[in-house]
Image (cartoon, rainbow, N blue to C red):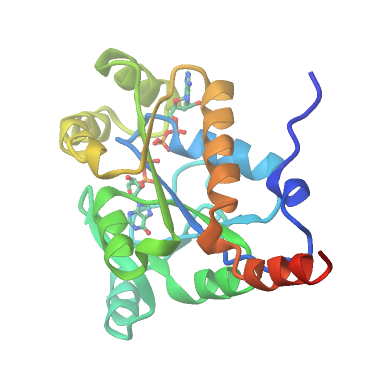
Length: 221
Ligand SMILES: Nc1nc2c(ncn2[C@@H]2O[C@H](COP(=O)(O)OP(=O)(O)O)[C@@H](O)[C@H]2O)c(=O)[nH]1
Ligand SMILES: Nc1ncnc2c1ncn2[C@@H]1O[C@H](COP(=O)(O)OP(=O)(O)O)[C@@H](O)[C@H]1O
């Protein structure tokens, strides 16, 4: 099957577009990180927001790529200085989205992908509803969620039990999101998120140069 053309080929090239903020949330272990990585590999024009966190680095994680790993004092200072677009406490650790990189990307017309929880999504919705597109990822079942958390083999049994205990709370926010995906098959989930991104890029209000483009088309009629 021929690849589906992306909106960069279906929207007129000389029309400037405002970047959007694409948020993925889910209970821990449902597959946000996996879906995000695949999406970033195949999509251009979108960058990942790298959060700051006070949690310990996991094996295989890279500082500055997966997270900016910082201590509590530095996190508190950044929060006080207004350096976060949003921040929250999750599983006893602090997580926050540094403002600078996001502002820069959006104003350059690039989209930004966020892996943040429902608390962060609510804060973004309060401050930037028009730029926000939110997607909630559900696991196919509770048993499968536990299998994925164990299979990831990155957390102790105690930490996994804590994440399972919080899963129901996190899931209770599913209806606050614009889109909902059940992550059964990774390829299908990536295709679904890609379809959402492509459609949202074509929203009229994001194509800020469209008025002028239409005038130019009309002038020649
Ligand atoms: N509000 C907010 N939540 C975040 C941020 N970064 C990560 N999170 C959320 O914190 C939770 C824990 O993330 P993490 O420790 O990486 O565990 P994982 O989701 O199991 O891989 C997840 O629900 C993330 O979506 C952030 O900057 N802000
Ligand atoms: N659709 C899927 N089917 C089977 N395993 C999956 C699927 N999506 C993700 N996984 C696996 O589940 C585990 C948790 O996924 P991850 O992306 O780390 O979740 P999250 O970022 O939401 O905590 C990983 O080992 C990942 O490889």
